[in-house]
Amino acid sequence: MDKNVELNVKLSVAQEDYDNIIRKAAGCGITLPELLECFLNDLSGGKARGGSDESSLAGEWFERSNFSACPTDTLLSFLAWNCFDIKEFVWTLSVLDSFFEDYDAAESEKEREDIWQEIDSESETIREIYTEYRGNTKEPQDWITGAKEVYLFYTAMASLVVHKREPVHITDDFWVKCTDMNIMGEVEE
Image (tube, rainbow, N blue to C red; front, side, top):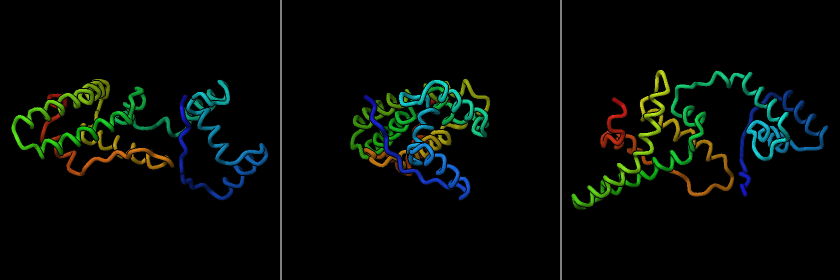
């Protein structure tokens, strides 16, 4: 059974708009958070949606809004629109970062070789995703720029969760090490 995620979101709306939405919520006997939850459930088309009509109308609203003009050539949008798990992508980056630290601390060539095998193996998933992205995008981002955007988006969204679990952190020199160690291999050429 899926658990609900409690979010702490700060919104900024015009006072008149706030007054109008509060009147709508009060008129239905619900709170503003309950109203927003209902809309988000309808927009997501998830299990807790109000119904297929409500979900369809929320989807139509999204398509007609300025959001439909969102960039489609970014790695982040590719992951999202192709249903790749953004959390798993970021966790893979985090695991690679840990391996890079182990590689730097390795005391023998054999240990470095073993760690490099782990890095290469863990990088394979990212290489496959990035290769598919490049093959389906007219002007793809370079992989470091795209991966940074995915990481920053994920951490920003994770910061909204009230009871978060283990935060994902990537060290500052991770991006340099990715380039120096050429973990993407031939993909970017």
